Image (cartoon, rainbow, N blue to C red):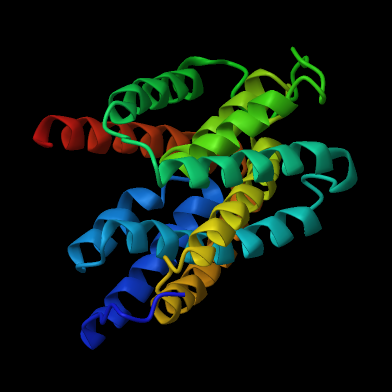
Length: 256
């Protein structure tokens, strides 16, 4: 863990409050990093601490969301263990690579991928709670889970949207069940990334824990809304989060 950086004490409260909101957003549709990453940057954290600290708070919120969705019966652990391990392994590899790689070009590709996920969510008649016909097997989904996990460890924004869209489009899950399983896979990728960042001393522990507590509270609220209202609330938030992330990344590209 990182001890050299000193954050202004007054920033702990606002950042923790922000994590409540982003934890709720993440539990329903993903995309909370759209708010937390810029906030941590504006708070003055160096880039490596931004990524590592954000992974800690995100993993804590994802733990609550995953537990709640599992208790609601949205997914089973045993049949999804291979995909979970694939996401974990992919994220660990991605987090190792990002420390040696220039991500500038990737910022041009990601908005296009996010726009595609948003359009699929908005236009596809299958993006609802009705299950569809799987296009690939559970084993066939492993490279997809590993690839998205790698992306989460390497860069991150939109991971939840990518998991949800592929689980609906490739595995034929209804949107609410896809959202539940997304949190399990995202928890695995967050945990793997966090381990790598923490091993490199790239986590601001106190801030991460405080924001993590806020994220856990937000996840409780978000999972309650998602399990109660299903695709009626998940679909519009998923589209909004994808489009917002796309706009933010495009803006970041052109402004340098």
